[in-house]
Image 1: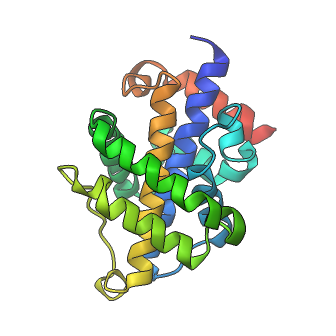
Image 2: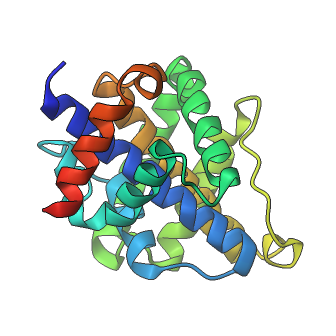
Image 3: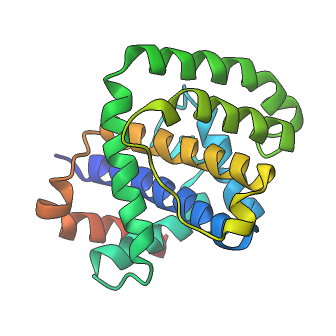
Length: 205
């Protein structure tokens, strides 16, 4: 296993955690960080990126996720629910990858949304609504479902729900990328030190 592979895995996990941190924030407050949401949703449409870093248009766009992953590896995390949600998405990725019909529907849906995303921006309300509907119609049918806790007031608002679902789709995209880079849950057992070193190198850069 090369350092580059570990670096790729770390970036993918950072993308996953950063998207899910916005899921948590949106569910709790009805508000999100527009730059982080943009970075997450942009990544959904970069299917043919040349490398892992290009999926996020540069590692700098997932620095928050890198810090969250570093906190987890140092047992210094402040939001246990975030990492529980991340594990649920990693498990969801396994079920997703094994369902060719769902994968095909997601690919078709993203192709249909790619033009409006390019024209309006991936975080435009119409695109977010489309991504949310795509998630609800496909990934959300897999069991067990990923459950998001939050403030019922905000979770009852259609726009908030659409953004949460769109961000979950972005998190799933990062989980798929992580697996494509050879990632597995054993990384957290045997490669913690290597992962931490890769994160530290990125954060210093």
